[in-house]
Amino acid sequence: MSELRIIEDDLSGPEIAALLTLHLAEMHQWSPPESVHAMPLARLRADDVTFWSAWADNSENGARLAGCGALKALDPQHGELKSMRVHPGYRRKGVGRAILEHLLGEARARGYTRVSLETGRPEPFLPARTLYASYGFAECPPFADYVADEFSVCMSRAL
Image 1 (tube, rainbow, N blue to C red):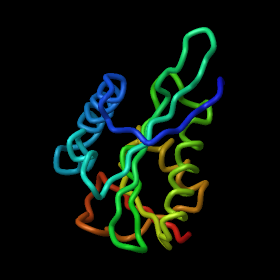
Image 2: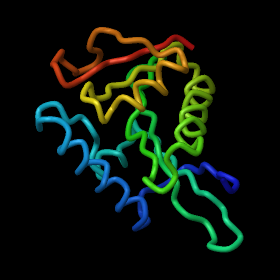
Image 3: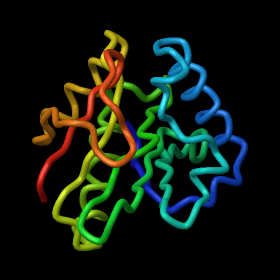
């Protein structure tokens, strides 16, 4: 893969809007509405969320959106990963790992002692759960405003 650049993003670009639209559509395809916790674009712009985009630089085609991720502040010691998404054309190329490592680094820089996330339980979410588990995330009880349901999995890890 070409070089990957991860930058803080203001969510104004059409590429980001398209990827987040795909993200929300797939979440609704795989889970019932009450179990979809993906944030819409407007919510990702809130003050308690910082959003990053990952760009693959290719000398032939310029920069292309490869993925994204966000970090939501839950309290001064606890952050939540949100909107982790890899563009379909960049899956299985290390983009998800790079975004996750970036988000964990940002969480450490903020002084968080814990990072948590919610993801889906159905089969299409298995690659995400496997990635998170490989970085030390383990299933945990629901946190923040989440409630237990058969379609969701909450995971957390100490930093």
